[in-house]
Image 1 (tube, rainbow, N blue to C red):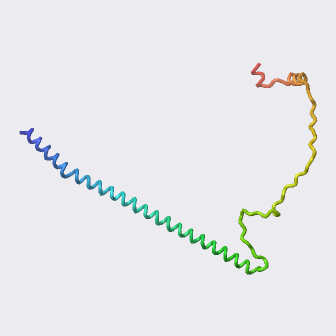
Image 2 (image 1 turned 60 degrees about the horizontal axis):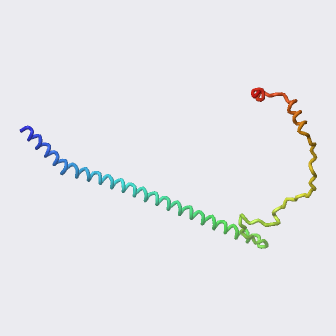
Image 3 (image 1 turned 135 degrees about the vertical axis):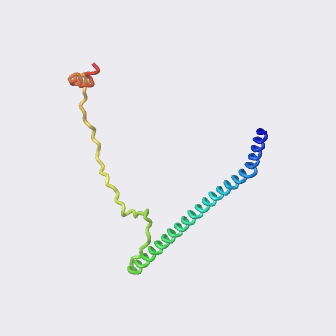
Length: 138
């Protein structure tokens, strides 16, 4: 009977695991995954909100800077009505402001060299003292 009681006990244990523990474990895992997904979604929303707010703030600053520049331009034009200022592009250059380099034309004169014969070159090479590198080769 001990074999039967062991088999019966194992059968009850197997049934308890299949009917009780596994469904409970699956629910816990599902809840944990949902929490992770919610946490990711919440983090994404927070990041999106911060980025949007920063964009709006910088955009407002740019608009304020543009308006301030326009106001300064208008004030300067009102202060000096004889000289209306046009906003210049930073890349535009007036040709009269650019100084052209002056190039002086000269006649090229040929370079004079003394021609040496091959014999003279060999004599010069023979007169040179051997260096450490050339001594090793000999």
